[in-house]
Length: 262
Image (cartoon, rainbow, N blue to C red; front, side):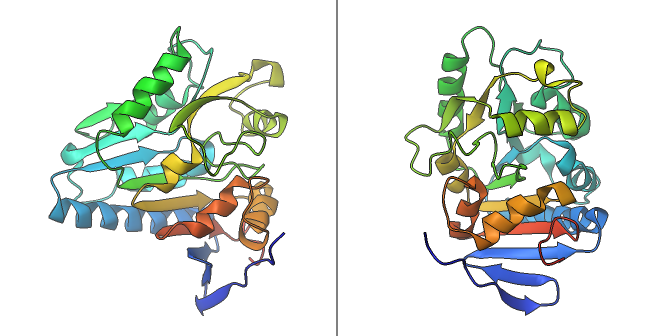
């Protein structure tokens, strides 16, 4: 094991752990508002210098504040933004409200005039879907990823048992671990564990890490231990989110409840 990284505070509420910039706020609403402002600023800056932006979105209750604030952002030319999302359950009906693509449609994709929105549709051949989605992502660089961290430290559906920092695939089928599936119940996405799918399609860790800029929002007391492991533990797949410390341009936004030092 490596020694835990030492956080370097740059100003109140802001510190750096390895490459990772960490910003902490008293409330999740403040966290979401500032994160959305900074994502919108990155979108505007990129659209000033390139024809379009390709962005990957996360879908979860923990992301609702930043998504709502981003929908309300001013002066973003969404007609030049192509949207993707990072994971999807296998086995749910196409119209199921728990599908992440449907969540994103309700909260942002259908509310803004995107150039295109590409949802993961597992269908009858999830393996082919994963290969086709990887090819779609590979057509041009991914500029921005908006993501969160799971209770077990996952990013996307890269749970500790399946996360691979050197994964040869960009999109793959995974088995969801029990902690991840329980989180879906605790987040009121499903009534019981029996309702939570066993498998999903996910973007892999290397695919996420190749994006130009990462914005990671993590609110809530239930995430505190995962955040502590990501910031203070070794960079290992036992806590997949720890790899964010190696990205050259990633910001982690926390509320006081999620911040181990909040």
